Length: 169
Image 1 (cartoon, rainbow, N blue to C red):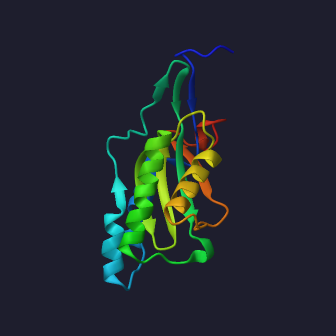
Image 2 (image 1 turned 120 degrees about the vertical axis):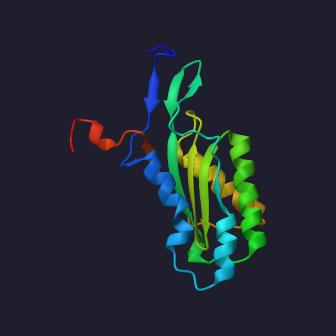
């Protein structure tokens, strides 16, 4: 089938955009931190970019699409990152990866042992390619060390959930 602007692709998941972004936004607050200093560090690395509108389609000559992903990466062996300069270095690497690959990151939240990201990826890249790009570029920034567990979570979401398909509730 020849693509046209009339064609639209939308990822549908269990959650709506608002649920995913709110969940990520509340990550730091919902965790019970004994170390108040770490809490303050993590708050500054919960970043919202309101210019990324995940509810609006990306448009190209071949159509419109909503390729929204919630990606979670877990630190290898659940090692806990605690130092502000490490979070800063990792966060810069995530931002650089997003710029290089044209990912629109709407929100990200760093936790001591994992990272949550809600983003819009290019339609030509699979969720695995996007997750691996972030994993590889952050590992490179940390001295080419494998800092992440081998797997990851990647879930799709949009303004519609799975219940609209087939009319199930």
